[in-house]
Amino acid sequence: MFGFYRLAAAIPQLRCGDVVYNLAQLQTLYRRAAELGAAAVVFPELSITGYTCGDLFQQERLQRRALEAALTLAETTAGSGTVAIFGLPVVCREALFNTAAIAQGGKIRGLVPKSYLPNYREFYEKRQFTSGFQLAETEFQLEGRTVPFGLDLLFEAAGTPFCFGVEICEDLWSVLPPSSTLALRGARLLFNLSASPELATKAAYRRELVRQQSARTLSAYVLAAAGVHESTSDVVFGGQALIADNGRLLAENQRFQRRNDLIAADVDLQRLGALRRSESSFLEAVPLAAIAVRQIPLGPVPAAPDITRAYNPPRPFVPADSADRHQRCREILAIQAAGLAGRLEHTAAAGLVVGVSGGLDSTLAVLVAVESCRLLGKPADTVLGVTLPGFGSTGRTHDNAVKLCRYLGTAFREIDIRAACRQHFADLGHDPECHNVVYENVQARERTQILMDLANQTGGLVVGTGDLSEIALGWNTYNGDHMSMYAVNCSIPKTLIRYLIETVAQEAPPDLAAVLDDIIATPVSPELLPPSAAGTIQQETEKLIGPYELHDFFLYHFLKYGAEPDKIAYLARQAWHDRYPAEFIEATLRTFLKRFFRQQFKRNCMPDGPKVGSIALSPRGDWRMPSEAMASLWLE
Image (cartoon, rainbow, N blue to C red; front, side):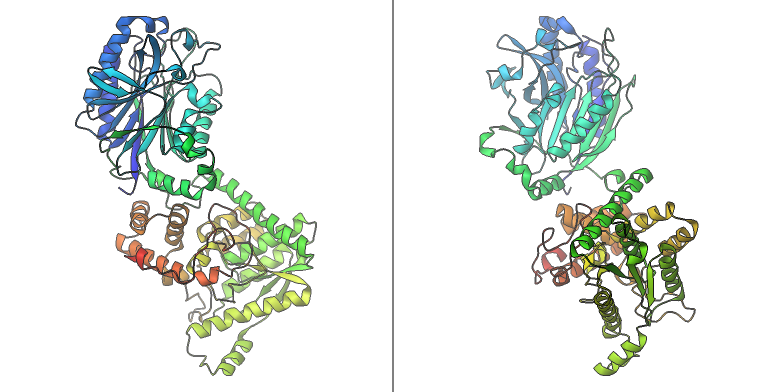
């Protein structure tokens, strides 16, 4: 469903040369993978016999029994769509090949030989095996059936994005892994049958190879390595199993298990296809016509019955691990400050002007402005913080704005906009008791006008505060807070801003940290409507348009992967089932789609600002869309 498939890697208990025992272990693990709803399960290299049989591979009895066991294991797949990928020695035209067998629906569908044979230190595979590069045949006769045999095989379930290629152990370690070519020809899944022994630090290196190859090929990569029951004469095998997806490690087992082991993870093959189409360098790597492959049809494979929460984080812009999150936030803050410092240096402006409201966005902007001045060796009072109280301002946000500028050491001015707004209402003939969009936007534009004029007066630049979430929804006033001279938050979603401020607070003096913590705890509001009788915020943004954590979730999948609305709703229900009912999620998604399409005209003339992640909405490079585009197709 929606391109999701569950992939598995299995590490069986083995006995070197005991084909009957090994077959039973592989059958057990295959059935377990099928019960989990896996579309495919990969076993280690030469798993029918064991990898460390040495010269026993030259014994005809072992060769024959291994082939018989492979046929039996293939029969085990009858009645199930789950694909089994396992290893055995295969004799073809007097040569012996280290081979992967691909079985489904009771049959062996294809055979793939190992390309690169290690012949160094403890490995002497060339003593027993021949490289797949030497294979002259393209087919193998197996009990009266012709089975495709070669390095050029792609296995594909018709009418689905499920398409995979296979390589074996050392192939991944080579300068030009076969998986790179297979990916260019359409394989979105790559499987590796491995028998890599354990050495100090090698597991980390192997993990990084898998992760990097999945990123380089924009694919899902699954590796299963031989386990501890291989011969320990000279080396020890750990049985590492890895599943990676486009550079992200989804699952890894615990090595050195002395029992059958199985891991599984869900991948989104539709998403990988979308990334390949949007990553222009992928298809330019090699002219596709120069790469010949044979496509081997598979029967229907099971789609993932559901998806795991780990694969579908509810806050995709925010790293779940606190250490990773802190590191990411420090890097983003550095990018923002470097961008603003570059603009300040290039324009030779005398200073920076920031409207400071006591809310999240303006707080981040002034923190970045002060840091950019530090980078240039300028004092903090190069930044002019301006608070502009209006009809909706509360004591809490006003006091926090004043304290923030004081503790940061910026220059500070306070300009009350209420009198000017009342004059403007009179000029327009607008009743100030009518709290409509005119009432709100007069205040937003008055603030921007003052900031721009102050920048002219001081020879400075106005630093914009609007964030990515607001830009996506058009939750800003055209030519009001929509406009600035450099928008430092333009590619930062609302769900991440609290963590960026929290990162600064963790390293700040106590007084400043206390103010930042209170700002983080303040409800999001434009503060354009009068507060309650108790002086608290009445106009809470998320009560009007829906939670930003949902909107950011929608934005991530809509922009990064081009996901269809039905799929986005499904993902959101999976990620947020314990917090929001399905009806609420779908209603909020409709709000997101309507606003995203209607507000493109604001994005078409948004100011410059630094891109800090993979998603941004700059009309100059990241997102180009006609202002008149209709949302009807997405709202069906």
